[in-house]
Image (cartoon, rainbow, N blue to C red; front, side, top):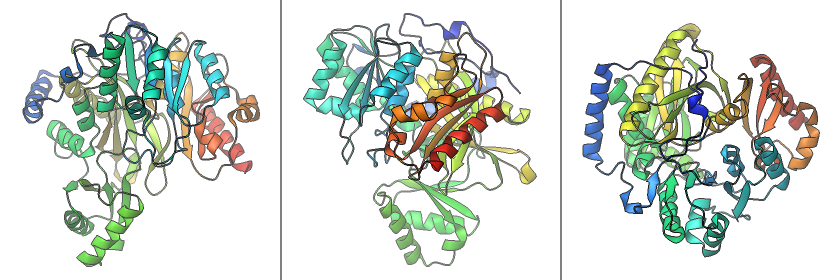
Length: 505
């Protein structure tokens, strides 16, 4: 198994827009052949011919640049820029991205303020001057992203400018770097009279990379036709019906997906036995009813994909893609994702332990994909989700499912652990993101008291660190990292927290 490789230079902040002050640790250094480079260059040219403005940011003005400044950073952790992610106003993760902030930064949030969590986060980060700016405390439906609020609401924007107070070298970070992030950077550059850096990909490339259909096509063209599960795009209800009926004759389970949503929000699992005997009209009505209940009936295109059988692992490859081509992409970790429910919702993750041949294949192909993205102009956090299948528990085939061209439930805590253990040994840990209505609402201050016996140790080797307060305070779940002297003990700590929360109902 490829072990963690400490990279001292990669973990030190540098004062220029080409580097990143986050603590990046490389896990593997895959080789890439001259033949690979030629194939990547050829595909880059094809993509650019089809999307000539894929990395363009000039429209946002001369003082808006891709990279990282040496002044304060803005952190927008709201997930509502992702389709379907803002449906429940109480299900927020805004505070989570604050774990990446430095002293003097501004964390922009929505939803109820949580003073006890802000104190908790400041203390662990040793950042007493970390500022929290709430621009959407009520968060009424339909929910608007905090980026959009800062762009459209004069009061929110004025407070943001006042908080920056003429700062220079500002860097804008967002959970997902959309066109709104770049537009806000453009407006700030004009009103502050200063250069604004955006720590993320150009908006067109960001949109494409987060689109499952586009990513699947790119993965097949770069890695081979068998790199993804069989899938078909549907631009209308009739096409969707036709593709479902066709695949149901050949496969046992299918999934209908929205190409631009995240996690399981846009996933609809179908058992082929339930649809094989239906007439086209009945199948169409059944599909549209399910989509309507989820608020997706008019969101075409979507696609139908074969739901892989005999899945033995669901690894996620976590990448950091530097701004300049002279610095290659970094593979920071491979995590086994815990999925729950019929839609395979993300429920957590832990560092993966995979057969050597599977890990080697994952690293090599992820590095090829990331190298292509970098050549297309990508910068920042990125991860690739896969499934590994095989007969009788033997890992044989890797399928690339989607690209998460954004921060997420694995990358934020992984980067935080790197930060907290910069001078110590890497701990064993488990990430938990349990979303359930089975928990009773619990104020965060009381949660700290309730789990004081599991408080994180100063050496970051045992205990629990809460990542955000919103789920636990709303009674919608919990979100934390559990540590242990070994992986088994870390898992035991995670289970103890969940059991105690369930018992308190």
